[in-house]
Length: 585
Image (cartoon, rainbow, N blue to C red; front, side, top):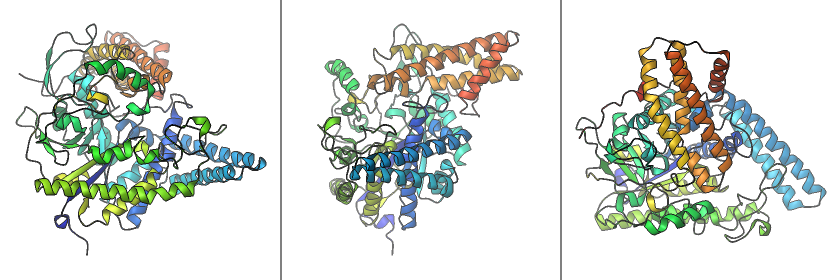
């Protein structure tokens, strides 16, 4: 007889996976471009689907809260994605076969066996994609959601970094496009929302962080949660210091040398907030908008105690020396044949990967984590008498892509927790349905970057992007109003495409990739491309509104933009003109 949630004595565990990639289709291939999407699909998204399906087949409902950003969902649903992805898999299979022959000829049997492992891996991915999922990955996630096994949540349309956007129209458009895209692809409205980079800003009198760009002078701006509430969103997730104060340790710093360099410049001015011991990351709270006719939004908080076991490269499970190393690759083909070895090992000293030895660590790590979940919830119950929750948010791409053994660990961990009668597996919405929060909190401006603020996305290397964003943001509402007031279908077409370019320009990925130095040149080119495309389209829209016909060159440019950046077919310029429910003192 299965225990009901009411029988469970400690609390609930909500695993949240945030799946996101920038828009890379039709924007290059390797090393940065569509191959980024294909790698993550083959090494993360399909392995996750197969893990969820296996759990369901074994009688365990995974109850994972799966974030799929609109920009990622649009790419996975794009008709061109399937053909390109299939071709990518063929290349991976072929190069693994060639690697096997190469290693066999040299008498390197362990490497040849690993090459065969990769050939079988990508062959299985191809079979799952074509035969089991019929090339429809969004449909596969939707079926799991419709069956009650996972919950899919959304995010800002292009993962725009909401606290720094310069106009409420831009925040409104990012949220409304997210809801519209989700409804089209998943057939229902979303309940949860992943704030990009956990970036939050409350209602207050806001001034541009750049003295020579953006709106000048302080003016009242709506809080992030107000936009969510107005569009039917019921909850979002924040980092621990956002709720409780204290030092924001971040989740990226140890991975990127570029961030470590930047952090040294910001460290001197950083002052961590006082820890508020009256609050707990194991409780949910309400973040209320200032309007009485808009329902409050619930907030879940990341649990640091369990989180460090997965996030930390030094202390977490992915950094185990037996696990597959992500960085060292063999060319041609780019397959990985070496293990982590140790956190201090350079690429030259990496030892050959041994799958059997790595697999031995999975049960041990899963059991350790599931016991940690139980103990944390039991301690909270003993201390407060409350039925608590552990919210465990991670980047989805960690599982299988960065951490090859991650899907195996997920399977064992979810199975172990599901077998514990004292802990409930639950999606975030399921938990809220049974445990409605009563206490309301005010949250500070924050992110899950080191120090909990914005410096990763706005600094001396990225301020030029924000100048472009603020300029385009200021220009577009007037263009949108002109298009809405006109019956000109061509003007509407130009304006909608300009809106797509603005959304793509606002993506948080470009400043992040610049600050981390992980794909700096690519990010700089992409930000420049979308700014230039927006500027030319805006000029075309102004001339068209004035009665001019498009030149053949302009017509060709519009067609190229529509073909290259073809996401969000249901974009509505009305979202930029005007702001619904503008902020009132």
